[in-house]
Image (cartoon, rainbow, N blue to C red; front, side, top):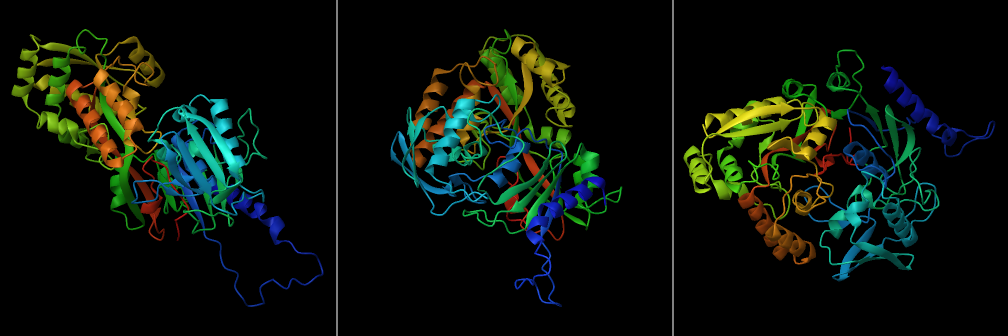
Length: 527
């Protein structure tokens, strides 16, 4: 057994020691009779290359942290597998008016320390998160919330600055987790421990090494744990991840499942193995090409539209990623409400003659020089092959001449801000499960992708869809907004990722663990 797994097992055993001791010399009437086997606890072991920045839901909002937080804490609403809209978890919620959203808590909710969960904890959790405004944290998502009222212990009322149709989806995120106000400081993060009312409670945390969770029997919600606990090992790379699986080369293959970090080659080999199962779903991550609108070249609409007319997505995903990702024809992936294949509708098939006609109509003459930026490690091992294939496709048209320029992530970000590229490869994982979060980041002066895109039509549609509470009408507005993107081409979607989890053959319900936002809900797993 590896040293890391040994420490995890010892920690779990010690954590339960106090509960198993009885007074010396006194009979325990509840003890099993001789000959009665004690049921073996069902504890699953998970390995991942993810890093955990914070156990505190008001802290940094990265994918590794979300996986742990989503299993420790409870939210008012949640999204279950196969159901694209929020359903009750800790509460049942509804709009009483366009700017008032009322949540009625379930009775008898508690934290593992025995404290009751009331509307006061809900208000404290949101007040604290919005006050802390942790860099990289979830506070900006809830900018529309002005206050949380508590007319009684089981009622929390969200008061909004303006109508915000995104709020039910935002309340499903880990940023909206409810914490125990008696255990959490109001003015700083709590990272050494965690007290939530989710399916699990924390029994051990070794930063950078491991997390151990035990089933919280007092949980009342939609994701009750079907196992007794989870041991999470944080490994450094794809080699260690592969070795953690059953039959790993170093003999330590004790993990029941592993995810995030496998190479394409590893996944291909594992699919043909009879010792594991590879379970995949569409990932929330998308990849795209962003145009720098401050560039004298790509500020020209005809140049951007001509490039959009040339890109062959199926060829790109085949040559760069061996079809382990899916071609994407809108900034919003197909599984999200309101998604349309806007770019396919606008440009049909790759067509050199059509691209040449676009350039001619825009008075763009001669072969157009372009500098394409890419970064080697941030977006995975296929990034170089992707950049080369994009260059090949554009150069082959005879309409463009592409120069590639690369830099590691910190320098890459600086080069983007300085306008060093005409266009550059980037990726996005949404912060909340709604189409809005695939579009809004690219509109406005404060967007995280500073390419200079400003559009009155896009801004107007964004404001309309955010305030429209009729689902059908909102989907239509989102579709129109995607159409504006396709016509104005500030960004060009290329592919959607896939989330791959490798598990032992005996592990059940793996597909139900995969969240659209690329993390795992562990409560349904069994073996």
